Length: 81
Length: 337
Image (cartoon, rainbow over all chains, first blue to last red):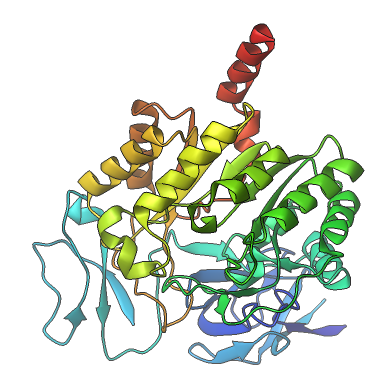
């Protein structure tokens, strides 16, 4: 089964962080990964963050590229679980 | 914007406009200088890296805050520790809204005209503390110059509400300066929070550059002094940021000033710029250098000190109360009784 991985929201407050910029993919397409493995790095104005893989599976498709701005809720990639 | 490791012996390429301040005695080989280059995206030294918040416990805390219409400084300040703290079921509640009457150039919290006080808020905070089963919690607030008591009674009411529902929960309050008003500070201290915190935020020379003009370095020290006088044996704490252009000597002097004002505990962290409109980071201090300042704080007589890139004033706030220092103080007070 394939699932879409979205950038999780950081909260409902109107001043919560709304997204970031993809700085580096840490998993190759076709590579297997365990839940919690580093999936990609993104930066906000304050810091760099690592997005963990939400489930064990294989990265099927990247929906965003390095350098892209992403908002919370955006689909980041598709994984086969 | 790129940040590259450089020493003062290897100046930046001529295409870069440095605004790093390499004054003072920081080890120049370990300091990252900031440069504006043609690349518009930010990069960070490898120690400024955290997990993006996610997971079931994180979602539970997020839902709870939403359900009870509560604000957290974790969200409003874009805190990079949000994943870790919410994952441990802790959050720093921000009472009296998320609009501040003061404007500090480093702070992500919105400035403007705040709304009316939510009279249900103390009970809602207490309910959140109960639902999360917190043994310790931190209450902070925006500055409310529009209220005659600066919101001191509301903060006290929040403490009373938590203590009523969760009598064993310990509380840190991180408050504004109340214009130095002793009566306002007394209202808060009468509620007996285990930790009274007021942040000095930076060294004296930099203070007026990053703080709203209504704050002053001397008045912040007075607030701590007054809180100490009014304390019933509870802890007094302050915190400040590094990376705003301060020198080693100024850091030392700030620690001396805080100790003299009666602080038992100090937290020191890295300033991180919340948006490009805010005060620029002038240096990223490496973790090992923070440890030097932590050791200095102990050397100067603080009972508890913590310093590190991601240390925030409320980060792992309970550690002070769990410390050997706190246990010793408790024994001394018990003996005195």
